[in-house]
Image (cartoon, rainbow, N blue to C red; front, side, top):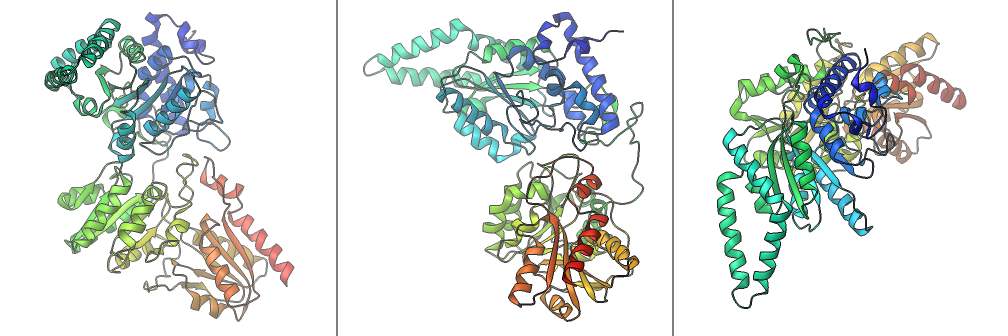
Length: 624
Protein backbone atom coordinates (compact mmCIF):
# COMPACT_ATOMS: atom_id res chain seq x y z
CA UNK A 1 0.00 0.00 0.00
CA UNK A 2 1.39 3.39 -0.99
CA UNK A 3 2.01 5.84 1.81
CA UNK A 4 1.77 9.59 1.63
CA UNK A 5 5.13 9.70 3.36
CA UNK A 6 6.68 8.05 0.29
CA UNK A 7 6.08 11.33 -1.55
CA UNK A 8 8.34 13.24 0.87
CA UNK A 9 11.82 12.78 -0.56
CA UNK A 10 13.28 16.25 -0.20
CA UNK A 11 12.58 19.66 1.24
CA UNK A 12 9.31 21.35 0.15
CA UNK A 13 7.79 18.11 -1.15
CA UNK A 14 5.07 18.59 1.44
CA UNK A 15 3.73 21.44 -0.67
CA UNK A 16 2.72 18.87 -3.29
CA UNK A 17 0.45 17.06 -0.81
CA UNK A 18 -3.27 17.80 -1.22
CA UNK A 19 -4.87 19.69 1.64
CA UNK A 20 -7.23 16.84 2.46
CA UNK A 21 -4.23 14.50 2.76
CA UNK A 22 -2.35 16.59 5.33
CA UNK A 23 -4.09 15.09 8.37
CA UNK A 24 -3.47 11.49 7.18
CA UNK A 25 0.15 12.45 6.51
CA UNK A 26 0.47 13.71 10.07
CA UNK A 27 -0.70 10.34 11.37
CA UNK A 28 1.74 8.52 9.09
CA UNK A 29 4.54 10.68 10.46
CA UNK A 30 3.51 9.84 14.02
CA UNK A 31 3.46 6.12 13.32
CA UNK A 32 6.85 6.38 11.59
CA UNK A 33 8.37 8.17 14.58
CA UNK A 34 6.89 5.73 17.09
CA UNK A 35 8.19 2.76 15.10
CA UNK A 36 11.71 4.15 14.62
CA UNK A 37 12.22 5.60 18.10
CA UNK A 38 10.98 2.38 19.70
CA UNK A 39 14.08 0.78 18.18
CA UNK A 40 16.73 3.51 18.47
CA UNK A 41 15.46 5.45 21.48
CA UNK A 42 15.19 9.21 21.37
CA UNK A 43 12.95 12.16 22.19
CA UNK A 44 9.45 10.92 21.46
CA UNK A 45 6.90 13.00 23.39
CA UNK A 46 8.11 16.40 22.21
CA UNK A 47 8.25 15.24 18.58
CA UNK A 48 4.77 13.71 18.58
CA UNK A 49 3.39 16.99 19.89
CA UNK A 50 5.04 19.10 17.19
CA UNK A 51 4.06 17.15 14.04
CA UNK A 52 1.35 19.50 12.71
CA UNK A 53 3.27 22.58 13.88
CA UNK A 54 6.28 21.48 11.84
CA UNK A 55 4.16 20.66 8.81
CA UNK A 56 2.49 24.08 8.96
CA UNK A 57 5.86 25.84 9.13
CA UNK A 58 7.11 23.91 6.11
CA UNK A 59 3.95 24.81 4.19
CA UNK A 60 4.16 28.50 5.08
CA UNK A 61 7.90 28.89 4.55
CA UNK A 62 10.31 28.33 1.70
CA UNK A 63 13.25 26.30 3.01
CA UNK A 64 16.21 26.49 3.03
CA UNK A 65 15.96 30.19 2.12
CA UNK A 66 13.72 30.82 5.13
CA UNK A 67 15.22 29.86 8.49
CA UNK A 68 13.79 27.84 11.41
CA UNK A 69 15.66 27.70 14.71
CA UNK A 70 14.43 24.91 16.98
CA UNK A 71 15.03 25.72 20.63
CA UNK A 72 16.79 22.77 22.32
CA UNK A 73 16.13 20.86 19.09
CA UNK A 74 14.68 17.66 20.53
CA UNK A 75 11.42 18.35 18.65
CA UNK A 76 13.09 18.49 15.22
CA UNK A 77 12.49 14.89 14.04
CA UNK A 78 9.51 15.81 11.82
CA UNK A 79 11.59 18.66 10.37
CA UNK A 80 14.32 16.17 9.51
CA UNK A 81 11.77 13.85 7.95
CA UNK A 82 10.30 16.65 5.80
CA UNK A 83 13.76 17.71 4.59
CA UNK A 84 14.67 14.37 3.01
CA UNK A 85 16.36 12.58 5.91
CA UNK A 86 13.98 9.64 6.25
CA UNK A 87 16.72 7.04 5.79
CA UNK A 88 18.72 8.65 8.58
CA UNK A 89 16.26 7.41 11.20
CA UNK A 90 17.72 3.92 10.89
CA UNK A 91 20.88 5.23 12.57
CA UNK A 92 19.32 7.97 14.71
CA UNK A 93 21.67 8.95 17.58
CA UNK A 94 24.03 6.09 16.76
CA UNK A 95 27.77 6.59 16.25
CA UNK A 96 28.30 7.94 12.72
CA UNK A 97 24.55 8.26 12.20
CA UNK A 98 22.01 11.06 12.22
CA UNK A 99 21.99 13.38 15.20
CA UNK A 100 18.92 13.76 17.39
CA UNK A 101 19.35 17.53 17.21
CA UNK A 102 19.58 20.08 14.37
CA UNK A 103 23.04 20.14 12.77
CA UNK A 104 24.12 22.63 10.13
CA UNK A 105 26.69 20.16 8.83
CA UNK A 106 23.88 17.63 8.33
CA UNK A 107 21.54 19.79 6.21
CA UNK A 108 21.30 23.33 4.87
CA UNK A 109 17.73 23.29 6.21
CA UNK A 110 19.11 23.28 9.76
CA UNK A 111 19.73 26.97 10.35
CA UNK A 112 21.43 26.70 13.76
CA UNK A 113 22.85 23.96 15.98
CA UNK A 114 20.94 23.65 19.24
CA UNK A 115 20.90 21.33 22.26
CA UNK A 116 20.66 23.54 25.32
CA UNK A 117 17.47 25.49 25.95
CA UNK A 118 16.43 29.14 25.70
CA UNK A 119 18.90 30.03 22.92
CA UNK A 120 16.63 30.15 19.86
CA UNK A 121 15.32 33.71 20.20
CA UNK A 122 18.84 35.10 20.55
CA UNK A 123 20.13 33.09 17.60
CA UNK A 124 17.12 34.03 15.49
CA UNK A 125 17.57 37.70 16.31
CA UNK A 126 21.15 37.43 15.05
CA UNK A 127 19.95 35.82 11.83
CA UNK A 128 17.36 38.59 11.42
CA UNK A 129 19.99 41.30 11.79
CA UNK A 130 22.32 39.49 9.39
CA UNK A 131 19.45 39.20 6.88
CA UNK A 132 18.71 42.92 7.04
CA UNK A 133 22.37 43.96 6.88
CA UNK A 134 22.79 41.77 3.82
CA UNK A 135 19.71 43.27 2.18
CA UNK A 136 17.89 39.91 2.08
CA UNK A 137 14.15 39.29 2.45
CA UNK A 138 13.70 35.76 3.83
CA UNK A 139 11.69 34.89 6.94
CA UNK A 140 13.29 33.87 10.24
CA UNK A 141 11.32 31.79 12.75
CA UNK A 142 12.39 30.75 16.25
CA UNK A 143 10.39 27.89 17.79
CA UNK A 144 10.60 27.81 21.59
CA UNK A 145 8.73 25.69 24.14
CA UNK A 146 6.99 26.96 27.25
CA UNK A 147 9.62 25.17 29.35
CA UNK A 148 12.47 26.92 27.57
CA UNK A 149 10.72 30.22 28.13
CA UNK A 150 11.51 29.82 31.84
CA UNK A 151 15.17 30.49 30.99
CA UNK A 152 16.33 34.04 31.55
CA UNK A 153 18.25 34.16 28.28
CA UNK A 154 14.94 33.94 26.41
CA UNK A 155 13.74 37.13 28.10
CA UNK A 156 17.01 38.92 27.42
CA UNK A 157 16.46 38.12 23.75
CA UNK A 158 12.78 39.14 23.83
CA UNK A 159 13.79 42.46 25.35
CA UNK A 160 16.06 43.13 22.37
CA UNK A 161 13.64 41.70 19.82
CA UNK A 162 11.06 44.25 20.96
CA UNK A 163 13.18 47.01 19.39
CA UNK A 164 12.89 45.55 15.89
CA UNK A 165 11.20 47.40 13.07
CA UNK A 166 11.52 44.40 10.79
CA UNK A 167 9.80 41.02 10.68
CA UNK A 168 10.82 38.31 13.12
CA UNK A 169 8.51 35.42 14.05
CA UNK A 170 8.71 33.65 17.41
CA UNK A 171 6.55 30.55 17.83
CA UNK A 172 5.76 29.63 21.43
CA UNK A 173 5.06 25.89 21.39
CA UNK A 174 3.01 25.57 24.55
CA UNK A 175 2.18 22.04 25.65
CA UNK A 176 1.51 22.92 29.27
CA UNK A 177 -0.78 25.96 29.59
CA UNK A 178 -4.46 26.07 28.68
CA UNK A 179 -6.93 28.80 27.85
CA UNK A 180 -10.73 29.03 27.75
CA UNK A 181 -12.71 28.92 24.53
CA UNK A 182 -14.18 32.39 24.78
CA UNK A 183 -10.85 34.11 25.29
CA UNK A 184 -9.39 32.13 22.44
CA UNK A 185 -12.28 33.14 20.18
CA UNK A 186 -11.99 36.84 20.96
CA UNK A 187 -8.23 36.70 20.52
CA UNK A 188 -8.64 34.99 17.16
CA UNK A 189 -10.95 37.75 16.02
CA UNK A 190 -8.59 40.47 17.18
CA UNK A 191 -5.62 38.75 15.59
CA UNK A 192 -7.38 38.67 12.24
CA UNK A 193 -8.27 42.35 12.54
CA UNK A 194 -4.86 43.48 13.75
CA UNK A 195 -2.93 41.71 11.01
CA UNK A 196 -5.21 42.55 8.10
CA UNK A 197 -3.55 44.75 5.50
CA UNK A 198 -6.33 47.34 5.67
CA UNK A 199 -6.09 47.63 9.44
CA UNK A 200 -2.30 47.89 9.46
CA UNK A 201 -2.32 50.55 6.75
CA UNK A 202 -5.11 52.52 8.48
CA UNK A 203 -3.47 52.28 11.90
CA UNK A 204 -0.10 53.45 10.61
CA UNK A 205 -1.75 56.20 8.57
CA UNK A 206 -3.74 57.51 11.55
CA UNK A 207 -0.73 57.43 13.87
CA UNK A 208 1.52 59.20 11.35
CA UNK A 209 -1.12 61.88 10.63
CA UNK A 210 -1.68 62.55 14.31
CA UNK A 211 2.04 62.73 15.01
CA UNK A 212 2.38 65.44 12.36
CA UNK A 213 -0.23 67.59 14.06
CA UNK A 214 1.34 70.42 16.03
CA UNK A 215 1.03 70.58 19.79
CA UNK A 216 -1.56 67.81 20.52
CA UNK A 217 -0.65 65.11 17.99
CA UNK A 218 1.67 63.02 20.15
CA UNK A 219 -0.65 63.27 23.15
CA UNK A 220 -3.57 61.93 21.08
CA UNK A 221 -1.46 58.99 19.84
CA UNK A 222 -0.51 58.12 23.44
CA UNK A 223 -4.14 58.34 24.55
CA UNK A 224 -5.32 56.03 21.76
CA UNK A 225 -2.59 53.50 22.53
CA UNK A 226 -3.45 53.53 26.26
CA UNK A 227 -7.12 52.99 25.51
CA UNK A 228 -6.35 50.22 23.04
CA UNK A 229 -4.02 48.48 25.50
CA UNK A 230 -6.57 48.71 28.31
CA UNK A 231 -9.10 46.92 26.12
CA UNK A 232 -6.57 44.34 24.98
CA UNK A 233 -5.67 43.57 28.61
CA UNK A 234 -9.23 42.27 29.09
CA UNK A 235 -9.27 39.89 26.16
CA UNK A 236 -5.71 39.10 25.07
CA UNK A 237 -3.69 36.59 27.12
CA UNK A 238 -0.38 37.78 25.70
CA UNK A 239 -0.29 41.24 27.23
CA UNK A 240 3.11 40.54 28.80
CA UNK A 241 4.56 40.28 25.29
CA UNK A 242 2.50 43.21 24.03
CA UNK A 243 3.78 45.36 26.89
CA UNK A 244 7.32 44.47 25.86
CA UNK A 245 6.56 45.72 22.35
CA UNK A 246 6.08 42.33 20.71
CA UNK A 247 2.90 41.62 18.75
CA UNK A 248 1.08 38.63 20.23
CA UNK A 249 -1.04 36.28 18.09
CA UNK A 250 -2.93 33.39 19.56
CA UNK A 251 -3.55 31.07 21.13
CA UNK A 252 -3.67 28.87 18.04
CA UNK A 253 -4.59 25.17 17.89
CA UNK A 254 -1.21 23.51 17.35
CA UNK A 255 -2.83 20.49 15.72
CA UNK A 256 -4.85 22.48 13.15
CA UNK A 257 -2.55 22.81 10.15
CA UNK A 258 -4.75 25.15 8.14
CA UNK A 259 -5.23 27.56 11.03
CA UNK A 260 -1.51 27.69 11.73
CA UNK A 261 -0.58 28.26 8.10
CA UNK A 262 -2.98 31.22 7.97
CA UNK A 263 -1.51 32.74 11.14
CA UNK A 264 2.08 32.19 9.96
CA UNK A 265 1.30 33.94 6.67
CA UNK A 266 -0.34 36.81 8.56
CA UNK A 267 2.66 37.08 10.87
CA UNK A 268 5.04 37.46 7.93
CA UNK A 269 3.40 40.82 7.17
CA UNK A 270 4.10 42.31 10.59
CA UNK A 271 7.09 44.66 10.46
CA UNK A 272 8.31 43.90 13.96
CA UNK A 273 8.78 40.95 16.29
CA UNK A 274 5.63 38.84 16.52
CA UNK A 275 4.99 35.96 18.91
CA UNK A 276 2.56 33.21 17.90
CA UNK A 277 1.20 31.23 20.83
CA UNK A 278 0.57 27.64 19.70
CA UNK A 279 -1.12 25.07 21.97
CA UNK A 280 0.01 21.46 21.48
CA UNK A 281 -0.28 18.17 23.32
CA UNK A 282 2.95 16.44 24.24
CA UNK A 283 2.98 12.80 23.13
CA UNK A 284 -0.11 13.27 20.94
CA UNK A 285 -1.24 10.17 19.11
CA UNK A 286 0.51 7.61 21.33
CA UNK A 287 -1.38 6.87 24.54
CA UNK A 288 1.61 5.82 26.70
CA UNK A 289 3.39 9.06 25.81
CA UNK A 290 0.26 11.13 26.45
CA UNK A 291 -0.13 9.54 29.88
CA UNK A 292 3.56 9.60 30.84
CA UNK A 293 5.16 12.55 29.00
CA UNK A 294 8.19 12.66 31.33
CA UNK A 295 9.04 9.01 30.67
CA UNK A 296 8.87 9.55 26.91
CA UNK A 297 10.83 12.80 26.87
CA UNK A 298 14.05 10.91 26.27
CA UNK A 299 12.98 7.31 25.77
CA UNK A 300 15.09 4.18 25.64
CA UNK A 301 14.00 1.50 23.12
CA UNK A 302 10.49 0.35 24.01
CA UNK A 303 7.69 -2.06 23.05
CA UNK A 304 5.24 -0.17 20.84
CA UNK A 305 2.20 -2.08 22.14
CA UNK A 306 2.80 -1.30 25.81
CA UNK A 307 5.31 1.55 25.89
CA UNK A 308 7.46 -0.46 28.31
CA UNK A 309 11.27 -0.51 27.91
CA UNK A 310 12.75 -3.34 25.87
CA UNK A 311 15.63 -3.68 28.32
CA UNK A 312 14.35 -2.58 31.74
CA UNK A 313 16.99 -1.62 34.28
CA UNK A 314 17.73 -4.28 36.86
CA UNK A 315 20.45 -2.42 38.75
CA UNK A 316 20.47 1.00 40.35
CA UNK A 317 22.16 3.83 38.49
CA UNK A 318 24.08 6.69 40.10
CA UNK A 319 21.02 8.94 40.00
CA UNK A 320 19.09 6.31 41.99
CA UNK A 321 21.84 6.21 44.61
CA UNK A 322 21.86 10.00 44.84
CA UNK A 323 18.08 9.98 45.23
CA UNK A 324 18.26 7.61 48.19
CA UNK A 325 21.07 9.56 49.83
CA UNK A 326 19.19 12.84 49.45
CA UNK A 327 16.09 11.53 51.23
CA UNK A 328 18.26 10.33 54.11
CA UNK A 329 20.12 13.64 54.34
CA UNK A 330 16.82 15.50 54.31
CA UNK A 331 15.50 13.31 57.09
CA UNK A 332 18.55 13.84 59.29
CA UNK A 333 18.92 17.59 58.83
CA UNK A 334 16.01 19.97 58.32
CA UNK A 335 18.37 22.63 56.96
CA UNK A 336 19.08 20.52 53.87
CA UNK A 337 17.39 21.98 50.79
CA UNK A 338 17.46 20.66 47.22
CA UNK A 339 17.51 22.74 44.04
CA UNK A 340 17.21 21.68 40.43
CA UNK A 341 16.67 23.40 37.08
CA UNK A 342 13.58 21.73 35.60
CA UNK A 343 14.97 18.22 36.15
CA UNK A 344 13.43 16.73 39.33
CA UNK A 345 13.07 13.31 37.68
CA UNK A 346 16.32 13.36 35.72
CA UNK A 347 18.43 14.33 38.75
CA UNK A 348 16.68 11.96 41.15
CA UNK A 349 15.08 14.62 43.35
CA UNK A 350 11.49 13.49 42.84
CA UNK A 351 11.48 11.48 46.09
CA UNK A 352 12.98 14.38 48.03
CA UNK A 353 10.31 16.67 46.57
CA UNK A 354 7.55 14.28 47.64
CA UNK A 355 8.91 13.92 51.16
CA UNK A 356 10.02 17.51 51.81
CA UNK A 357 8.12 19.74 49.37
CA UNK A 358 8.82 22.91 51.35
CA UNK A 359 12.57 22.29 51.04
CA UNK A 360 12.57 21.44 47.34
CA UNK A 361 12.96 24.11 44.65
CA UNK A 362 12.59 23.59 40.92
CA UNK A 363 13.55 26.94 39.39
CA UNK A 364 12.79 25.99 35.79
CA UNK A 365 15.37 26.01 33.02
CA UNK A 366 17.44 28.64 34.78
CA UNK A 367 20.77 27.22 35.91
CA UNK A 368 22.26 30.66 36.58
CA UNK A 369 19.41 31.54 38.91
CA UNK A 370 19.60 28.09 40.57
CA UNK A 371 23.20 28.66 41.63
CA UNK A 372 22.79 32.23 42.91
CA UNK A 373 19.55 31.20 44.64
CA UNK A 374 21.54 28.44 46.36
CA UNK A 375 24.15 30.99 47.39
CA UNK A 376 21.43 33.08 49.00
CA UNK A 377 20.09 30.03 50.82
CA UNK A 378 23.58 29.23 52.09
CA UNK A 379 24.11 32.82 53.23
CA UNK A 380 20.81 32.48 55.11
CA UNK A 381 22.01 29.45 57.05
CA UNK A 382 20.58 26.63 54.95
CA UNK A 383 22.50 23.71 53.42
CA UNK A 384 21.72 23.79 49.69
CA UNK A 385 22.45 20.90 47.35
CA UNK A 386 22.23 21.86 43.68
CA UNK A 387 21.63 18.89 41.35
CA UNK A 388 22.35 19.72 37.70
CA UNK A 389 23.74 17.80 34.73
CA UNK A 390 27.40 18.54 34.00
CA UNK A 391 26.66 19.92 30.53
CA UNK A 392 24.00 22.30 31.87
CA UNK A 393 26.07 23.50 34.82
CA UNK A 394 28.39 25.14 32.29
CA UNK A 395 25.73 27.82 31.91
CA UNK A 396 26.21 28.92 35.53
CA UNK A 397 29.99 29.30 35.53
CA UNK A 398 29.95 32.98 36.49
CA UNK A 399 27.44 32.41 39.28
CA UNK A 400 29.60 29.61 40.74
CA UNK A 401 32.65 31.86 40.61
CA UNK A 402 31.11 35.17 41.59
CA UNK A 403 28.21 34.34 43.90
CA UNK A 404 29.31 31.10 45.56
CA UNK A 405 33.08 30.81 45.58
CA UNK A 406 34.17 34.41 46.21
CA UNK A 407 32.06 34.30 49.38
CA UNK A 408 33.20 30.73 50.12
CA UNK A 409 29.59 29.67 50.73
CA UNK A 410 28.81 26.04 51.61
CA UNK A 411 26.93 25.04 48.45
CA UNK A 412 27.11 21.39 47.36
CA UNK A 413 27.01 20.73 43.60
CA UNK A 414 25.74 17.26 42.70
CA UNK A 415 26.91 16.97 39.10
CA UNK A 416 25.01 14.22 37.28
CA UNK A 417 25.86 12.91 33.78
CA UNK A 418 29.55 13.78 34.22
CA UNK A 419 31.70 12.29 31.47
CA UNK A 420 30.48 10.76 28.23
CA UNK A 421 26.69 10.50 28.06
CA UNK A 422 26.33 8.99 24.60
CA UNK A 423 23.44 9.44 22.22
CA UNK A 424 22.69 13.14 22.76
CA UNK A 425 26.14 14.06 21.47
CA UNK A 426 28.31 17.18 21.61
CA UNK A 427 25.87 19.45 23.40
CA UNK A 428 25.29 17.02 26.27
CA UNK A 429 28.63 15.31 26.91
CA UNK A 430 29.70 16.22 30.46
CA UNK A 431 33.40 16.35 29.72
CA UNK A 432 34.41 19.85 30.81
CA UNK A 433 33.39 20.16 34.47
CA UNK A 434 36.72 19.14 36.02
CA UNK A 435 38.41 21.80 33.92
CA UNK A 436 36.02 24.69 34.40
CA UNK A 437 35.50 24.06 38.11
CA UNK A 438 39.20 23.52 38.84
CA UNK A 439 39.97 27.04 37.67
CA UNK A 440 37.86 28.59 40.46
CA UNK A 441 39.46 29.41 43.84
CA UNK A 442 37.64 27.94 46.88
CA UNK A 443 36.05 25.20 44.77
CA UNK A 444 36.70 21.58 45.75
CA UNK A 445 35.95 18.55 43.55
CA UNK A 446 35.36 14.87 44.29
CA UNK A 447 34.45 11.88 42.12
CA UNK A 448 33.27 8.52 43.51
CA UNK A 449 34.55 5.17 42.27
CA UNK A 450 31.33 3.26 43.04
CA UNK A 451 27.84 3.57 44.49
CA UNK A 452 28.97 3.36 48.13
CA UNK A 453 31.54 6.09 47.67
CA UNK A 454 28.91 8.41 46.16
CA UNK A 455 26.92 8.05 49.36
CA UNK A 456 29.98 8.69 51.52
CA UNK A 457 31.03 11.71 49.46
CA UNK A 458 27.60 13.33 49.64
CA UNK A 459 27.64 13.04 53.43
CA UNK A 460 31.16 14.46 53.55
CA UNK A 461 30.25 17.31 51.20
CA UNK A 462 27.25 18.36 53.27
CA UNK A 463 29.40 18.89 56.35
CA UNK A 464 32.38 20.37 54.52
CA UNK A 465 31.49 24.05 54.95
CA UNK A 466 32.85 25.38 51.63
CA UNK A 467 31.88 25.10 47.95
CA UNK A 468 32.27 21.49 46.85
CA UNK A 469 31.26 19.41 43.85
CA UNK A 470 30.58 15.69 43.59
CA UNK A 471 30.60 14.52 39.97
CA UNK A 472 29.25 11.14 38.90
CA UNK A 473 28.42 9.53 35.55
CA UNK A 474 25.27 8.52 33.78
CA UNK A 475 24.24 4.90 33.89
CA UNK A 476 24.52 1.86 36.09
CA UNK A 477 26.32 2.43 39.37
CA UNK A 478 29.54 0.43 39.71
CA UNK A 479 29.19 -2.11 42.52
CA UNK A 480 32.74 -3.45 42.43
CA UNK A 481 35.42 -2.81 45.09
CA UNK A 482 32.79 -3.04 47.82
CA UNK A 483 35.39 -3.86 50.45
CA UNK A 484 37.43 -0.73 49.69
CA UNK A 485 35.64 1.92 51.69
CA UNK A 486 38.12 4.01 53.60
CA UNK A 487 36.56 7.10 55.26
CA UNK A 488 36.58 10.22 53.11
CA UNK A 489 39.37 12.52 54.27
CA UNK A 490 39.83 15.95 52.73
CA UNK A 491 42.28 15.90 49.83
CA UNK A 492 43.24 12.25 50.33
CA UNK A 493 43.16 9.46 47.77
CA UNK A 494 42.75 5.74 48.36
CA UNK A 495 45.19 2.95 47.46
CA UNK A 496 43.33 0.03 45.91
CA UNK A 497 46.39 -2.03 44.93
CA UNK A 498 49.90 -1.13 46.10
CA UNK A 499 52.82 -2.62 44.18
CA UNK A 500 55.53 -0.92 42.06
CA UNK A 501 56.73 0.14 38.59
CA UNK A 502 53.43 1.39 37.08
CA UNK A 503 51.09 3.65 39.05
CA UNK A 504 47.52 4.09 37.84
CA UNK A 505 45.74 7.19 39.19
CA UNK A 506 42.06 6.98 38.27
CA UNK A 507 39.26 9.52 38.76
CA UNK A 508 35.68 8.45 39.51
CA UNK A 509 34.14 6.40 36.70
CA UNK A 510 37.58 5.51 35.35
CA UNK A 511 38.42 3.44 38.45
CA UNK A 512 36.33 0.62 36.99
CA UNK A 513 38.35 0.80 33.74
CA UNK A 514 41.57 1.04 35.76
CA UNK A 515 40.70 -2.22 37.51
CA UNK A 516 40.39 -3.87 34.11
CA UNK A 517 43.71 -2.37 33.01
CA UNK A 518 45.32 -3.53 36.25
CA UNK A 519 44.10 -7.09 35.57
CA UNK A 520 45.42 -7.07 32.00
CA UNK A 521 48.82 -5.75 33.06
CA UNK A 522 49.11 -8.39 35.79
CA UNK A 523 48.27 -11.11 33.27
CA UNK A 524 51.11 -9.86 31.09
CA UNK A 525 53.57 -9.93 33.99
CA UNK A 526 53.69 -6.24 34.90
CA UNK A 527 53.74 -4.91 38.45
CA UNK A 528 51.19 -2.18 38.97
CA UNK A 529 49.60 0.00 41.67
CA UNK A 530 46.12 1.51 41.51
CA UNK A 531 45.12 4.69 43.32
CA UNK A 532 41.52 5.95 43.49
CA UNK A 533 42.11 9.71 43.26
CA UNK A 534 38.84 10.68 45.01
CA UNK A 535 39.77 14.39 44.99
CA UNK A 536 40.55 16.25 41.78
CA UNK A 537 40.92 19.53 43.61
CA UNK A 538 43.05 19.39 45.63
CA UNK A 539 45.02 16.41 44.31
CA UNK A 540 46.71 14.15 46.86
CA UNK A 541 50.30 15.31 46.42
CA UNK A 542 51.53 13.23 49.38
CA UNK A 543 50.34 9.98 47.83
CA UNK A 544 51.93 10.83 44.47
CA UNK A 545 55.19 11.84 46.13
CA UNK A 546 55.26 8.59 48.10
CA UNK A 547 54.79 6.65 44.86
CA UNK A 548 57.77 8.36 43.21
CA UNK A 549 60.18 6.09 45.04
CA UNK A 550 59.20 2.77 43.45
CA UNK A 551 57.21 3.67 40.32
CA UNK A 552 58.72 4.45 36.92
CA UNK A 553 55.55 5.31 35.02
CA UNK A 554 52.49 7.24 36.15
CA UNK A 555 49.16 6.96 34.32
CA UNK A 556 46.26 9.34 34.99
CA UNK A 557 42.77 8.29 33.88
CA UNK A 558 39.80 10.68 33.78
CA UNK A 559 36.58 11.08 31.81
CA UNK A 560 37.20 14.76 31.12
CA UNK A 561 39.01 16.72 28.43
CA UNK A 562 42.77 16.74 28.84
CA UNK A 563 43.07 20.53 29.01
CA UNK A 564 42.69 21.67 32.62
CA UNK A 565 41.95 18.19 33.90
CA UNK A 566 43.39 15.93 36.59
CA UNK A 567 46.26 14.74 34.38
CA UNK A 568 47.55 18.28 33.92
CA UNK A 569 47.60 18.77 37.69
CA UNK A 570 49.61 15.59 38.19
CA UNK A 571 52.01 16.58 35.40
CA UNK A 572 52.53 20.00 36.99
CA UNK A 573 53.31 18.36 40.34
CA UNK A 574 55.78 15.88 38.80
CA UNK A 575 57.52 18.75 36.96
CA UNK A 576 57.63 20.84 40.10
CA UNK A 577 59.28 17.97 41.95
CA UNK A 578 61.71 17.52 39.03
CA UNK A 579 60.92 13.83 39.29
CA UNK A 580 61.88 12.88 35.75
CA UNK A 581 59.09 10.32 35.82
CA UNK A 582 57.14 9.50 32.68
CA UNK A 583 53.43 10.25 32.58
CA UNK A 584 50.66 8.91 30.34
CA UNK A 585 47.52 11.03 30.42
CA UNK A 586 44.38 9.11 29.55
CA UNK A 587 41.67 11.72 28.94
CA UNK A 588 39.20 12.84 26.32
CA UNK A 589 40.88 14.75 23.48
CA UNK A 590 40.31 18.51 23.55
CA UNK A 591 37.50 18.34 21.05
CA UNK A 592 33.75 17.86 20.93
CA UNK A 593 32.65 14.23 21.03
CA UNK A 594 29.76 13.28 18.75
CA UNK A 595 26.77 11.09 19.59
CA UNK A 596 26.93 7.33 19.92
CA UNK A 597 27.04 4.42 22.34
CA UNK A 598 29.35 5.28 25.24
CA UNK A 599 31.40 2.08 24.94
CA UNK A 600 31.94 2.75 21.22
CA UNK A 601 32.96 6.33 21.95
CA UNK A 602 35.45 5.22 24.61
CA UNK A 603 37.05 2.82 22.17
CA UNK A 604 37.17 5.46 19.43
CA UNK A 605 39.04 7.93 21.65
CA UNK A 606 41.30 5.31 23.22
CA UNK A 607 39.80 5.22 26.71
CA UNK A 608 38.69 1.58 26.86
CA UNK A 609 40.74 -0.90 28.89
CA UNK A 610 42.40 -2.56 25.88
CA UNK A 611 43.54 0.73 24.35
CA UNK A 612 44.86 2.06 27.67
CA UNK A 613 46.76 -1.16 28.36
CA UNK A 614 48.42 -1.00 24.93
CA UNK A 615 49.51 2.62 25.52
CA UNK A 616 50.94 1.78 28.93
CA UNK A 617 52.92 -1.20 27.67
CA UNK A 618 54.29 0.82 24.76
CA UNK A 619 55.36 3.72 27.02
CA UNK A 620 56.78 1.43 29.69
CA UNK A 621 58.85 -0.37 27.07
CA UNK A 622 60.22 2.96 25.90
CA UNK A 623 61.41 4.12 29.34
CA UNK A 624 62.52 0.77 30.78
